[in-house]
Length: 333
Ligand SMILES: [Zn+2]
Image (cartoon, rainbow, N blue to C red; front, side):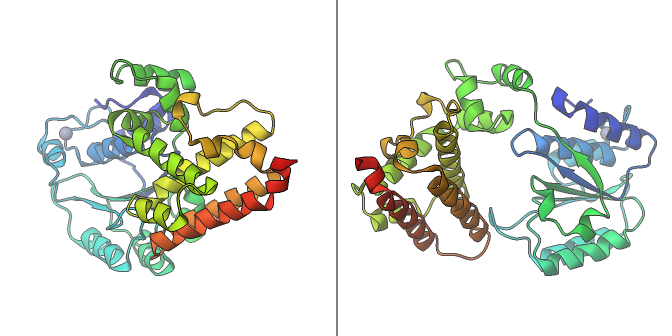
């Protein structure tokens, strides 16, 4: 019996039925917001496909297939992900995948491959994958997981059955978190920072992410104020996961835009943004903030290519500083 959270019920029930009737399609594009438990969903589905004695379409949990899968060495299962977080999937990884799919299947009901995040395919890798999608051996199950299905080529999307996963309602997310959070943790603050994704919120509570976030935003604020030099700032933070830093800035900027438009802030006071960033709605007009938001999106795309993070961070800080300097009269007047 899978212990998936209730917000996966609609998607899960449909796949369970397909598993019970033994008619799972050869490729599924599973897509939805990050941090809602999507990896557990994919694991539960892989387990159900590999299980030798499924119960109502769920993995039984005790057959040889289930035991091997749990131990992480099922011979009919393979997982393909970028070698470095945030980077592209390489064409030889996709060729290896095709080789694995082409090998004869062992005793499992299906041969299962998980590709994640599936949007990290460059053109060559996507073409190589297309060949496998066009002529899959029988009883192959390719599971493509992504939060950005639109970035996959249409040729790939059209060959997969789509499985949309939906974020929980705020009540579902709070209830799920309440059972797992340590005492004293504030579920609402964590959920706001995690965009309503409960598993991401739980991860925030567990590590030192909140502390690092506050330190980064403080430093970025100091850099904008001129209390910390651009080079020193970038040198201090270039070793961090740049996509995470960009996501933090994106949240702060999006919240500043909301406040400037007269909407209430979604980030709690407790999320402690650097003082320099708190005054963004007063220091910049909406147009400049949207321009910075647009630049930040380009920045996030650049991060998927081989780049020098120190230089990128310096560029980002300079860009924000010039936006603020250009509007200095607005602050003084
Ligand atoms: Zn089993």
